Amino acid sequence: MAWLTNLMTSSIGRKVTMSLTGLFFVLFLIVHLSGNFLLLAGDGGRAFNHYADFMAHNGLIQALAWIIKLLFAYHAVVGLLLWRQNRLAKGQRYAVRVTDNTGFAARNMIWWGILLGIFLVVHLQDFWFKMHYGPIGMKDGVKDLASVVYEEFSETGEVIFYVVCMLALGLHLWHGFDSAFQTLGARHRKYDKLVRVLGFIFSIGLMLGFASIPVIIYLTGH
Ligand code: HEM
Image 1: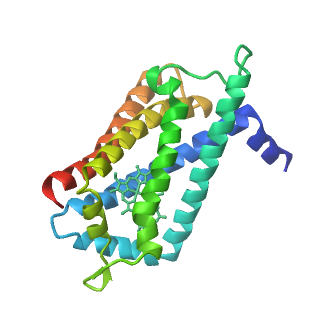
Image 2: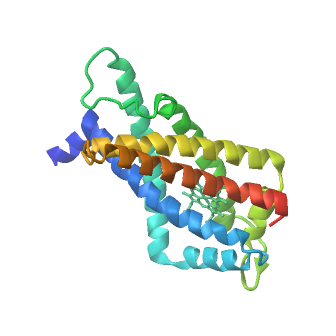
Image 3: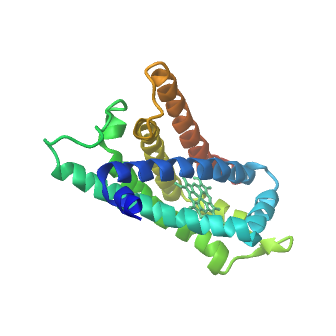
């Protein structure tokens, strides 16, 4: 068990678990974005509602969903601890040097992270809480979650909030990829540029994909 304590408390151990949880979230985000695109199917939200109903009634998916929420909390707490540790250690040598390849994105990692933490609390309360615990209308025999989303994104303030948060997501992911691959030792001089370019394209892709949903719903009504 000493290795586990070491993994959770040492600077390098914390960076490894931050990297692994971060890469796991990327898988979640790809699945989440794909499902959310059903909101734009132009069928009054029917396909999305059936997809959400399937997700809500599948035991394995619900178990994974709770694990993801716990890992988000873990990632946030350890991220804050690492940030504080790095600030206290300023001027000393780090166990792992913080890369600065992504400049502005890297230097403000903590702020993108804090904004994303706030986003997640608001986001879960907006949709997930309503779907599972709130009163919600029915359509075709399933909960009409799509109408909740359409209504939410008819408000200018909500759309601006989501777009700003997705910008933070893009910047957080961009440096996150770079940092994770370096921490996990998956960087080689030969492939360094390729890894960085792929990380950049991936972050921008997820950012634009997620940001497009509230904007398109706002502009078209569904
Ligand atoms: C802006 C585009 C997004 C839309 C339209 C959207 C929509 C939704 C909806 C409708 C739900 C409720 C699903 C359900 O409970 O069955 C949900 C849940 C969730 N969303 Fe998002 N989401 C977006 C972006 C994000 C982002 C960027 C993240 C992470 C950084 C995220 C993390 C989550 C999490 C963790 C849940 C709870 C999943 C569960 O426990 O089932 N979402 N989202």
